[in-house]
Structures are given as C-alpha cells and as structure tokens.
Image: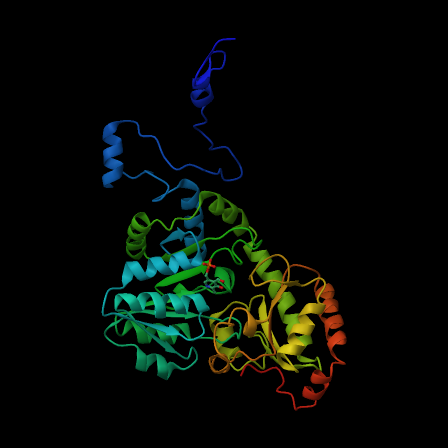
Length: 416
Ligand SMILES: Cc1ncc(COP(=O)(O)O)c(C=O)c1O
C-alpha cells in the first residue's frame, strides 16, 4: 500500500469531509443540535451582507447559533417577552447587563438579598469603572425610593430571595425605578416563568441562572435575559464583542428541559409546602422560611405577584452551627450540595458555604443564622425525604447543645 507523509492513498480523506453532508433536518422530532462554530455562505456577497447585518443569518456561533436561538425564543415566549439572549452562565448574563447598560458615573440600586456573586459583581468589579452600587432592604420601599436617583441606571432584585425567601414588591419597585428612567432587572431563577412572570409586573429585564430549575438536572451552565427587542439588541452587541456565549450543547439540553419545566415546578413546590408545614411542627426547628406558609409575613404579597411558591425553603435548627452540621451529616437520601433546582433534594448550610465569606456581624445583618439550613426539594417521594429528615432530627435530638437550646421559646414559622 502506497502512503504519503500526510495520508494514505487508499483512504478518501475528501469524502470524509464532504460526502453526504446533512442539510435538511426539518423532520427531526427532537430539536437538532447545531454543534458548530461556523456557517457557510452561498457567495462572497452573502458573507459580506451577513457580517454587516444587511442580511439576517448566522455568521459565527459567538454571535448566534440556531440551537441557542431556539432556546432564546422559547424562554422569551415563556417569560412573555419580545426577545431573549442566552449567555454562558447567569453571571455571564449579569456581566452583559453591566457592560450593556452602565457607564462611569451611573449607579446600581440593588437588593441586599441578591445572590452573593451578583452583589460582588456590582460592588467589587463595577466599582473599578466608577459605577456605584447601593444596597437596600428588599422589603423596604422607603429604602428603594431613597436610593434611586437620576444617576440610577439599573434597579436589581431577586424575589423570592435565597435562602431567606423574602419578597420584593416588583410592581411598586418598578414604578419607583421608572419614575427616574432606570431599568428594572428581576432575577427569576427561583420561581421560573411557570410561577412568576416579572415583565407583567413592570420589570424591563428578567434574568435566569438557567442551569438551575430551567435545566432541572444539574447538568448545564447557562444564563438568559429577556426583554424588549431594543434592549436585547444592546445585549447582542455585548455578546458579540465580549464573547460570553452560551454553548449550543447546553442550549440543546435546556430546550429539552423546558418541555418539563411546568410539571417539575409544580411537583417540587407541592413537596416544599408539605415539608415546610411539617418542619414547622418539629420541636428542634425554631423557624421556617417559605412564602407558601400563611404565617410568612409577606404571604399575601407573594400570592398577589406569584402563581406559586417554588421548591426552595429554609429553616433554623436549635443548637447553631454544631447542630446544623450534625443534622446535615446524618442525611442519607438528601444530598449535601450547593446547587439549586436539581432533580435530587439537597441541603446547604449557608453560614459556612454560600455566605461563609461574610464575617459574623455581616451574616447576622443578612439574617443568616448559624442554625440556618437551606433545603432545595427535588423529585423524590415526599415521604422518603421526610423520613430522611426525621432520622436526622432523631440523631441530633440528644446532643446536649441541642437540648439546651431547644428549651428556648420558639418563633414558630416566621420569616424574620
Ligand atoms: C439566583 C441566582 N442568580 C444568579 C446565579 C448565578 O448564576 P450562574 O451560577 O449560572 O453563573 C445564581 C447561582 O447560583 C443564583 O442562584
């Protein structure tokens, strides 16, 4: 057999590249995955026109990709928005918002109860560019009003908040922001458009860490923002230049996941409500935070602006960190894991993980007690989750610190 230095004469390398190219996938039932960086052009002129934007069409997957566009279009439809842009992660989406809408001298008014990295993106990284971050109490409209001024460009909140399930009045905050021409950004990761549609309450931009409930299976990182066509146009410009693009593979996974979003959200919230009620009856539990409980101080507002209460709750155990850690270490079915929105139930001890970088005083200020435990309810049978939590309570009940602490009066099922 003849062979040259760079290939075998008996092997048709050109056929390996060009034969039987698939060009029509229109009858494929599952969305096809366009795992490609580049696109072909019918002519040099078409290439030039696509690059310049004179002609619609794909150029390069940093800008657009058919699978990513399918995901964007579906999220826009679910959030009842004109358009959407997907990003590599939720933080990628926040980064794009900052670069798209802020300039030196502007300020951001942000709830103190947003995801910690969102707060750092504003207070650490945006501060370097002369952009001020002002943090306010999510629930205090007076603080929002005082902080928003003519230099405010973005007003940012997450409602319900994580892990304490506080609610921001999206309609009222939007009115305050719009009076000063600021854009309202709502992080809707926890409830998804199944249970809350912030655009209908006045939000200009809705953002998701799409790897949470949207994926629902803890597999893919992605972020997505919805809003008007003109606002999304700004974000597409940022995407094209800064390159924080969503992987087509992740978009493909997410497209499939969105098909089951409603059923998963309804199932986890049913479990969360049952477990929140049950936790409120446990002698070792001093407080439960879940907006679905009638005792939650903002239950009425939550019922007004939400169509449900979601699958995440938190509760406080007597005995502080020692009791919380012992309880967590006893779990056999529920996982020790910091993600949100997976199929499997998981718990986190916020004071030593997600909020571990705060000092004790800052944690107290944020309402993160040492005995706080976050439970993200999955799709297991609720009776099995309950049995696992129960055996963990049984195991820690006889610890001296817990016995001493649980003698204190209980603040039953409150979000304080
Ligand atoms: C509510 C919320 N928003 C935003 C983010 C950031 O998203 P990502 O991890 O996809 O960058 C997270 C991450 O946990 C989150 O929980």
